[in-house]
Amino acid sequence: MNVDEAAPQKGTVTQRAIEQIKAMIAEGRLEPGQRLPTERDLAVQLGISRSSMREAIRALTVLGVLEARHGSGIYVTQLEAGDLLETFGVVADLSRGPRLVELLEVRRILESTATALAAARITPDQLAEVEKHLTAMNATDDPEEILAHDLAFHREIAAAAGNETMAAILEGLSSRTFRARVWRGYQEEGAFTRTRREHAAIHRALVAHDPEAARAAAAAHVGEVEQWLRTQLGG
Amino acid sequence: MNVDEAAPQKGTVTQRAIEQIKAMIAEGRLEPGQRLPTERDLAVQLGISRSSMREAIRALTVLGVLEARHGSGIYVTQLEAGDLLETFGVVADLSRGPRLVELLEVRRILESTATALAAARITPDQLAEVEKHLTAMNATDDPEEILAHDLAFHREIAAAAGNETMAAILEGLSSRTFRARVWRGYQEEGAFTRTRREHAAIHRALVAHDPEAARAAAAAHVGEVEQWLRTQLGG
DNA sequence: ACCAGCGAGGTGGTCCGACCAATACGGTCG
DNA sequence: CGACCGTATTGGTCGGACCACCTCGCTGGT
Image (cartoon, rainbow over all chains, first blue to last red; front, side):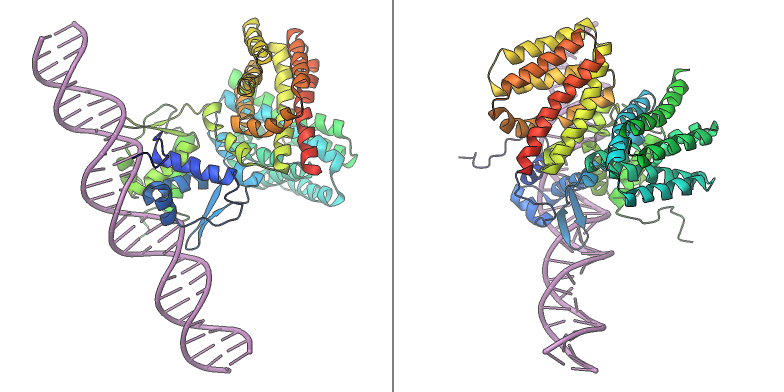
């Protein structure tokens, strides 16, 4: 009669705890924003030590599923695209060589589609925001500031596309360290003017609400960097 | 003179440890496949307790960056697309409602492009593998088996596209639990024959090495499910 | 009656030490 | 020379202690 606990020991207890908590959320027993029992209680419920439970919680925290507030408790995040896809930036940060090209290829595909969607749906307010970053980007020559406005420029466009998940993925693919690494070399070759032309083309397509032009402009924009990076590695 | 330790206490010590290990990898001080010092040594090096260090290691383990082998040591993974993007499945598993549609939209965009690329590049061997799963899928009526071959069908195509990163993302977007949830309802409406037709269309395009036909067929295939899911939520 | 301030209890964060379990390696025996 | 086995190493788990921070109710004054 020692099989009363339905816990077939597969993998580590921590891994099991992670799966169980994930299952609780997937099954709806834990709603977004809801507070979990305390670490101590959870450990007792799952029959493991607090140390192991803490590791499980930490793991789910970095995945963006849980959020621990010191002194208050542990909460389920809103499980929105941004929460869960934040870790996507890690991929971009740790990728090198050929994989960087692959990432840019993915970005080109998604960014061109997002820009096309944005051209069709963008509102005057959103367009104004895009223009703000465009002019700010062209008004300075501080690389840091240019990079920041460049990121914001594309972020606003992705947001205007109306697909938060896609925007979150693109955000990860354009993580600060990722772009800083690639662009450092790219911009050194006097690509500023070319970049400005491409940004202007994207902007024109948005203003004209021309999805096809927007798609082409965005694909060309990312494709330029992609091709440059390809030659950097190939030869 | 108590500032000898360059450790400005921001965030938890565990979080700091995570960042430091990530930085070590990003800077190349840790190569893929390389073994790390023991937990105990690492804890001493970073001036934290073993417990906190273990939480950091566990976090990086679930992210697919590190791999712990009981009794052997801790190793950096190969940092390949599959390793780092495995967590992508969590997003698919925990998403519901409108976000499922967004995920399918992303999948439609990527899958159609991947299928187009595959049509241009696929080799006879790869094509044979695709056909194997296609016939196996049509030869049974066991939902479990169909689902498995369906997954393999699209996985082979994604692999033939030649972009491992894209394939890994699609793999995550098609995670077993994700598809099981969506397809359960979809297939109940007698979508089997329609699905077979769509798969046949994709296959024809691959055989003909016709990228545009492949893109259209794949987009339509995913789009069907997407539209069905949209109506499920909308009314 | 109301509100500001304070204090106790609760909660996550960190640390320590011990022991268990799986592995790796070297010595031993056939 | 090779198969076997024991031991040292290393990750996995546990329990407890203490700290830092937050919450909320109590208290006191207005």
